[in-house]
Image 1 (tube, rainbow, N blue to C red):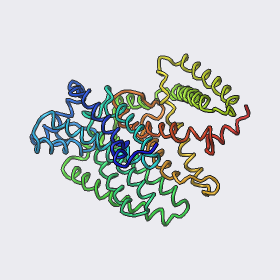
Image 2: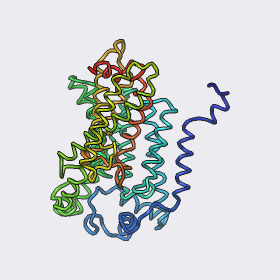
Image 3: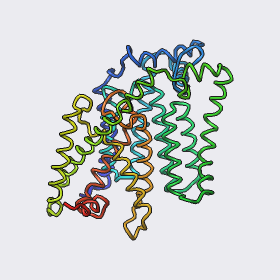
Image 4: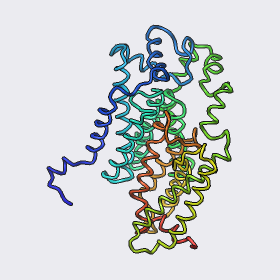
Length: 423
């Protein structure tokens, strides 16, 4: 359907994202904080710094120092008020949504991108158990924004091959490092693996491009840590505040093992298999009702029966540990996306190569790096999913809206896989 040029400007998909954000902001107004728990730390810590105390030396803190000092700066400029941090959260959450839209736009048309981004707004930014307006940790919000900016400029470099994009990506890696380690890790892994993906065995080009990203990252992070070690006893930073994951107390080790699923790795892996089977059953149903020609339906019936049976058995065995969320299968999904991107990149365009392969590879690697901490037990809720899952959720919509139709119409890797099934 074609619209007049004036009307077309009024129905741009981006406006749907802005409207969704505005509506969610209105309906959740003043219901973002839980001051008894983490929000109390986030409000009090900058105030103590503003009053002359020093992070780590006078105030216990386990993350890197950007966020507390940034929020103390906001207190100094705009006043010590809850709204100061709330407005900051709104601004950074809008930046996160904008970055998600820009990243996904490299993979999908504007309409599909808007749909995926709207779900990011609803399921991540305004999730009741862990919203981004007043997050449990501003360090995580800032780190997420900086790491997403790293991904965006890596995607820009993939398209333009301009070194300036790689340099800016390195700057954001440095900012992510002084905000929260794990977000810098995701950025480093994304840039490094993409450059390996791009240059292959050409070691010289690989090292040169790595230097273009590494030098600005180090230029941002190293001076900050140098100031810390110059003013604070290193034993306090390393042993007491666990700044580099050192001397971690047993209680925190237990908590992280629980969060990652490594406390019972075999059980966690079996639940991932169940989530994969559940996802496969829903996917098969979508393809079944979309296959109007009926060519794939005989195979799909068997696939659905087997997948549903496996999911039901595992859910019955682990119903107290697994809530039936298909997100437990996310690592397998992302590994599959990386495999698809690598496979398409290695083929010439005349043989089905995909120009989106590099973008898909970058986004999938970043998404996988972001869930390393919860690799065997990806959360569907809780306080931290909002930081780890935005791009992963959007990739699921990419698969549903762009890749899945190829399973029916072809050509596409899903269509090829169905053709190999012996059923």
